[in-house]
Image 1 (cartoon, rainbow, N blue to C red):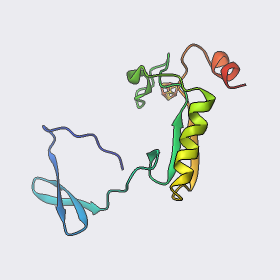
Image 2 (image 1 turned 30 degrees about the vertical axis):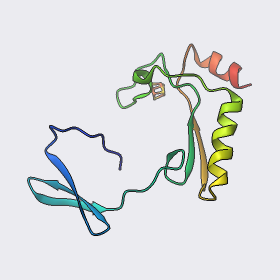
Image 3 (image 1 turned 90 degrees about the vertical axis):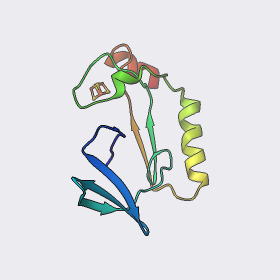
Image 4 (image 1 turned 180 degrees about the vertical axis):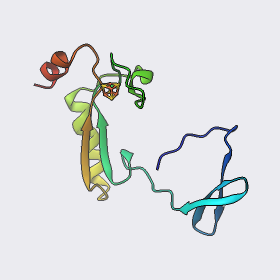
Amino acid sequence: MRLEINRNSQLKITKENNDFIILKDNKELVRGDIESVLAHCPEQAYITLSERCIYDCTFCSVPKLQGKIKTLKEAINIVEQAKKTGLMKAIAITSGVAKSPEDEIERRG
Ligand code: SF4
């Protein structure tokens, strides 16, 4: 589960021993660990090649990023850094569509 911090939220988080607890109206809703991030995700080198998108799918944050377009060298560097930790179990690659789907495919070709 991934949550953003919103100070006006009805949900609060607290820590008890090694557990993090999410409370709603001061009642425990869920309890668990917070996993550390390797490269954007736990145990993964998760790479978004184009951090921008001409589309605007409701569920997706990529168009709001207006971020950079990674080079192949940058993507490989992320994987190499994640691998060095010895904790990497997967590589996930995704991308927004900076100009057009065809342009995304051409750039990666
Ligand atoms: S990155 Fe993918 S999911 Fe996100 S807005 Fe673009 S097309 Fe939609």
